[in-house]
Length: 271
View 1: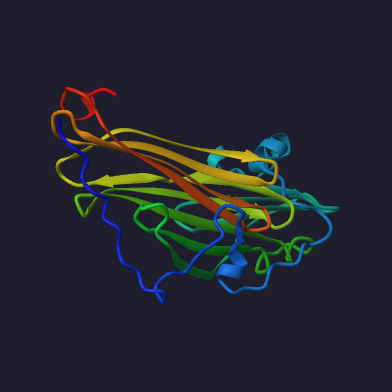
View 2: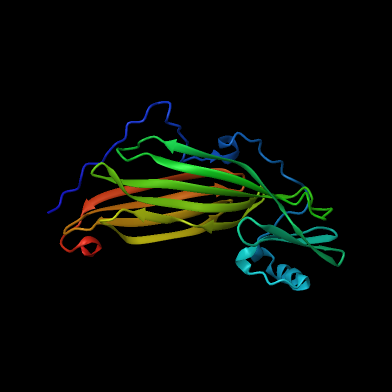
């Protein structure tokens, strides 16, 4: 029977370790050393699901063809209505209706900052890294009078969990999501782009990832099982999650398991 190799524990100096309070959450604004936004009064953004009927009407009036998954949010004031949507990579636009007059403006996209934080070794597991990237989608340069002070925030979080087998990184899970939110109001949407990588000689037996929103917080969850490509192989699983709420408070963690399967080759071995 094949035996599971020793887990390699990297030596990390105190200067290299930057800890995060992953279970209780930490503000992305604190991580990036930014001031938190001010909650604006008046009309608030709504998701497509909350106001799909009016959103569809506005799209129809514009003459554009926009898929549901491109829509970021809809907002309605005293005289204006606006729909924010995305086309292509980092191109955001609004359809604006002002007293029956339709116009289309490009929203301004601002990079507010990025940072990679390394978490210390926990329970004999290899260290993890989490990358944070925050952008602001601003309507300040559009024709809107009522919504010019409105912004939507886009926080991309990538958590990296590694399987170290026989002293080498053999496979990696990247739990990655982009959380779009109206600060202090609600999560407008989550884009899940989680993925894995594995070296030659290692197989990915299963991989699932999904999103959910609970209350004020959005989550991306990812689960993977890997196997060494051998008879009665060592196997390794990771269950990971990341989160962000509409105040930009982030969190994340993971559980790792190791075992030796019986019979069979690679993923076909049981269990």
